[in-house]
Length: 274
DNA sequence: ATCCGATGTCAAT
DNA sequence: TTGACCTCGGATC
Image (cartoon, rainbow, N blue to C red; front, side, top):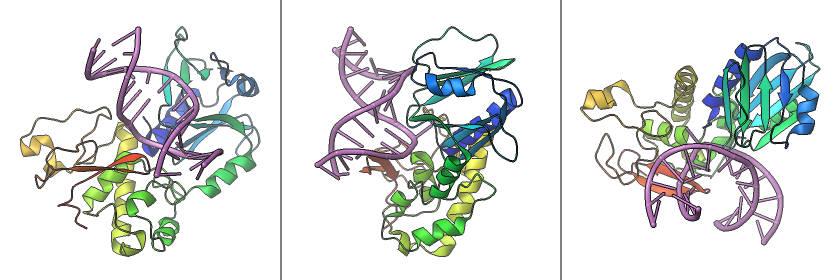
């Protein structure tokens, strides 16, 4: 279940499992049959990630060329990998990759397509800075945020402003900095923005490392506070995400929920005052 | 067996 | 702002 850390983790894993090898590509489901033909038998020569977009390069070399596989998992997409032998296909498998020792299966992506270098460049140009990329320029995000009347809780979800942040990181980073999600971007001060960005870099790197989203500071963990550990689908410890109606871990006030741009937003009105 | 929700995005209104 | 889309798994009947 994908925010940016998941995608970067996949890019790293896929390079490790298939890099340099010829890969058999197929579409058991059939919806990516034409694309799979273009990739089938080509060596995986590189992987990349920007925000929630994943790329594999087949053929070509460091100077370019070849084809790029572009995948966006969307809300339900799922990439699974395993060691040989390849399992019998179950369910709707858009793309199956089989290397010498490993396989990967892609289900339910919003995007699965083959694109050129130029099309990939255009995609990068459209996306905002990604806290997980070395080439990220947080000033580009600040330029947008500092001029916008839009609420910061919305801006953080806008992939053209900042790439890779999803609903969990949005809610959690705002909580960690005590910022009301409804605060207009232009009313956020520069120091707060810098600390949010630095925090996202650290949180998301940790997310790539451990494969889940943990945002609770050591002094606030269930162990440290004598509470039972929290179990949730995303597998990590969080302050407010999906904790609406429950007491805030820090102040005890009730965590709020509100639908913003068709997504559930969670925050503590006391820790994140207007 | 059926319903519902989910860490996302886009087109249409 | 709303609905559509993609698919799976957990909750509910």
